[in-house]
Length: 370
Image (cartoon, one colour):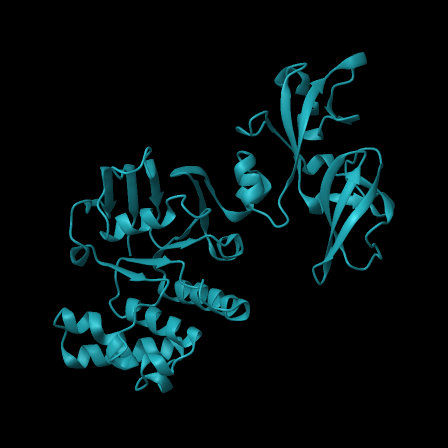
């Protein structure tokens, strides 16, 4: 397959006050499944379409296997793309939709037939080959669109939010199918989504984009467990990470973080030399994920926890196996995620603890984590 490199790529529209994509530099390894994830308007689809040649690059360079493709027309880039709306030809049956790209390139009929039937077998759409798109379900249409992409055997596969039109059950099924297909083809794939669940479950690496800038790039585990800033911390994870304005204090020689009327000891990962890294009186942001807040009476052995915190459950949201508690402790509001085997309901008074060894400290304005 292929290695894809973006070098300080910029996309600028004259009507915009700022660049849609700002000096994006990124290397995608041969055979890697990379997911671009971020909110609407962050530039992720723009990045994909610049790679495909569907929109022009304002500045910078894009290369595939060392070849500069920045100004090449789409047909010369050896790329296949699966679109959000499938883009099937309504007047052609499934066979001809899958074969269309090969026919346009003048491939021999026997080769076209072999490739179409191979792709149909791989995707389980053989019984559909003589049906028209109007006769297909959303999941079947998606498989046909993927089949049209893989028959060309391109260097790079691009997926632009391909599952957003499917229901939740079908999205889960298609995520698994696309992941299995990638493992079989060992293809270089770049996948765009706004759905963090898709990103976390499918990616070898994720790129979190915001306002045309890469906020963080890494494996799903790296990004979830060590977010670079508060944007990443709250965008990745559901429910999102709890964030509190905090102030570093060393009163009485004991270093800690003051949050409202609560003072927490420094997290153990900062305890050695922590006071040297934080400044007395300076504002910080303390973060902890809802699943790292435990009932005081059910704390796991070995967890480095703060003192129990009394709070009221303002709302208990059942999520099946889990329950999300909206808690308030003297004006300090936060969410905790607990297993559903403990009976908690709205209006209950409970005691919780924060797992300090799982907490995070960021700068006051959400900049890089400390």
